[in-house]
Length: 118
Figure 1 (cartoon, rainbow, N blue to C red):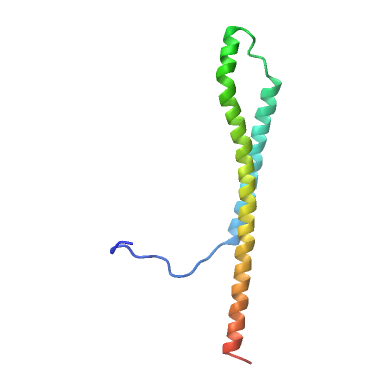
Figure 2 (cartoon, rainbow, N blue to C red):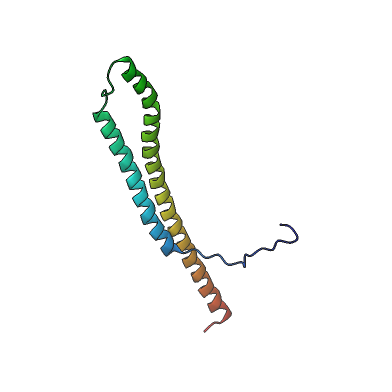
């Protein structure tokens, strides 16, 4: 840190697990919507497969369309999966933060009873 910069950290760490739980629900919803959009796009495009025709123009269109189309479907399906994994990871973080807070409170109570017995 430069001489002119000062840390704004006061030594206290606070995590709002209620807010994180709310974010988990929203993240789960986004994962579901993205995966559903990918599945719907894939299903619809499979049902329309071959509609471009067998002539030169149809084959040219198909050649230019298939690669990017596949990339979009894959991105949506994988993006939904990644968000689903992230949802689980955030839920694990919430559990860990809450357990840490409970342990800190228990340790504080034990120390207080040792310092001020009776």
